[in-house]
Length: 587
Image (tube, rainbow, N blue to C red; front, side, top):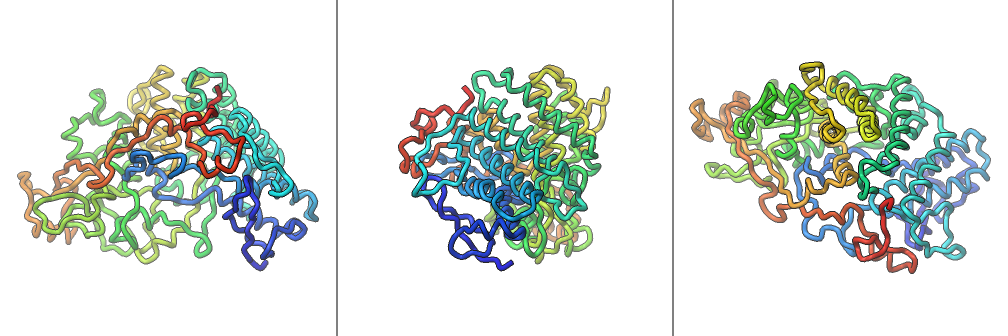
């Protein structure tokens, strides 16, 4: 098939579509060509999958997990920046497929496959808008700018959820129940993923985001529990489950924990995970996202309790913990975070290589801190933290090849399904079931069983178990792009608002605690003789200059529709916290 770009120009409100289609037409969409040729039809549908995205090392930058102040004063306005997506371009692609495929000459099974994927992607696209705006206009057919009414009002949030459910049910009815990892169709949407996603949508529907007046006892939790239990039990019965090693969830492709992947294959499709996660000296540019000290502290100890829990085996004061934060941690910590003086076996490095971050010792591309006794100052203090992301890094890639990262992007994995189920179980009155799931996740993590094999979980009440689930999601799913949306649906932006972020500086010391002369420290680091204990640590706020505090008001739970879109209509209401009258909740 000759691949020539086609721009679909007509979308809702008469704006232009930026999507490109790899089909044989230079001027316009011709359904008699697309839907009479399976290769072109599949190429058309493949463009819908772009909505899934790919590996993004900065996916959790909006949260407290990673450095960077995402929200300064008035970061979101009706006329300015927004992280939301008004994606009627993708809706139109799905609507074209749904409307036109039946008239083509493909076989019935091929038509049903196209329909199923289009229904799912339309639902997926609407969900991405509804969770950020609330209700939006429901458009079921491609609109013609000359013959159709384009000035459309918003549907209610309840109507949008109903529509999403209808599309997902249509998709599930047509999709293959499961696409095996050995199939050439692996990476296409199947019934398992669609069912798990449907369950996730209902989790959102029940959440405090959409039910601020009755966040934890509304009737939607029962439906969410039923669907999440169904998805969990169905997947489990088919052999899906937690793999033994947390570090290999993504790196071991096609394993039993992966519910849905986005396929990457060099050279045609790659991602920038290692490129953005590694220290600059081992990449092709500085790391683009670094874990914060605030997040480092949230990982439990080996017994599953926080370091400052007096009942914990590994209890420490704040001061003692800062000087030994890497010791006796939840094993997920060492599989997720790279810290100063840690052994880091990257391909192409000398045997015993250790990664240093200390100013005057580490490479200028890796260092962090403000040591006044070092002449060469760090230029990384606005972006670095003294920590780097290790999770999902492919250490077999040498430095020149970091941009050849082609590991499949894990869009949904079984641990998320378990946590979704646990949350709905707890809120629907099945707290004991939720605790079983939490224990399973912590057991796989390698946390010590402890008394009663509770893996450090002391929560009993519904409220305490809710908090335990929130904490577990933060750790288990870290850097996977979940945290900010979790805080949104729980209405917990208070954990971000007016908060600063910090890193940890390391300065080499002698055995007696005095600072080591920098030349001596450099020499010892050159032979990788300096270990974590040979440094003293201090907390440093990041960034050092510019905006230093997040401002995340409650009105950010739902974003405004851009004024440029509102101006083109007479019927489209703005959200009530942004000068309009539309209530985006399930009031």
